[in-house]
Image 1 (cartoon, chains in turn cyan, orange):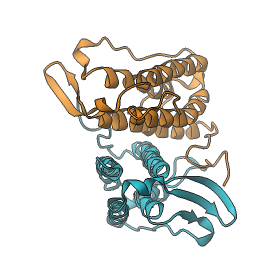
Image 2 (image 1 turned 120 degrees about the vertical axis):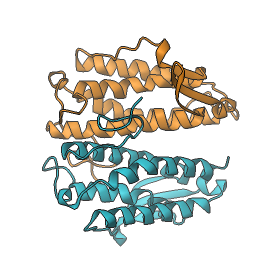
Image 3 (image 1 turned 30 degrees about the vertical axis):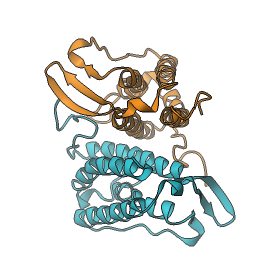
Length: 164
Length: 174
């Protein structure tokens, strides 16, 4: 199995629960947040929806420079949120499909102009991005619970759905 | 990175490096879970703070049966969730499970990862997947998932959230 094949399989698998969760987030809850320091439900959901699109600039570019701006989607409805997720997932998978094993040894940087936050291999940044997405999707599951939105099975049944 | 990395256990070496890297964050999160909040939960249907934290710590110990066995059968187990008495107790249990995970990965040949692995309860098989997919998803990503939930529990209790994949609203900067 090539490196990208392993990643693609995993991303497709992890996408299933993310999609199922995003489909359940009603716009009435978009501005809600559990704590004054927390992200709003919308901001967190948009982040989760966006992240699998990051593979695009991780594979096709050699850096992300915040100084050049980074626009986030501003969905008004659940359908727009899910549509954004599907688009970003497709973007990310398209870039990964085009990456041969040598691509993953190339270097990649996160920076804001002169200030370099991170420099690593493309292999490492893709790996970290998957974990990072799983992290925020986990947070989103607590936000959903607090708004009494049933949580779909993620790695196993939840208190709402699924069984073993 | 494992010093035992060779051409034939490069997968294990990468998994160890990832466990070590994520382990730094996990340790910081667990160190901040206060014992007097172990019974707190954010919602009726949620796990308690102590229960969720113990689950994150214990999940590391799923590595050993994933590597060394072809299956895990709940019907043959006498599982009792770990119940920490203190934060120190919780962190010590994490260290134990974490070290055991790294030990069992060391010198694990790349050949094993495509072998099928099943989760079952007697006759009932929940799933059969290659060992690499079990390790990747049911162990590593699963830990990150519940640790993410734990970060919301910290926030809800006004406990500073450590930087995780970047700064939090409490700590770190870019």
